[in-house]
Length: 81
Image (cartoon, rainbow, N blue to C red; front, top):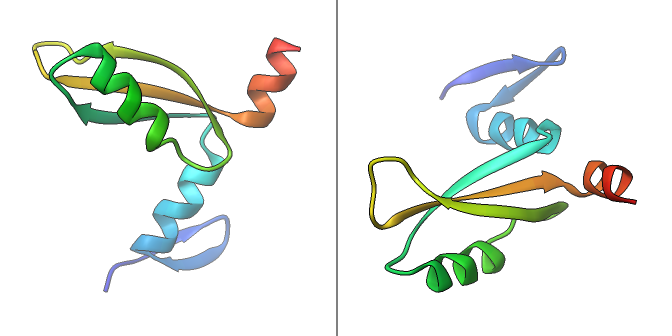
């Protein structure tokens, strides 16, 4: 088992990933899709909790992999209000 320390706490790898994701301001997730409509639907359907979907783009050097960008909800609301 891999153990790491984050903010003075000892965490397993899975818990570390969850904690890192909570602290991230922006998250990027990749989705495979044949069209922008399919990628958009997948990005909205699989959005992480507490994050707002910001945009989607085609991954460089790819024809079917799309990168969805999400921003933390509190930051998004404070910036866009």
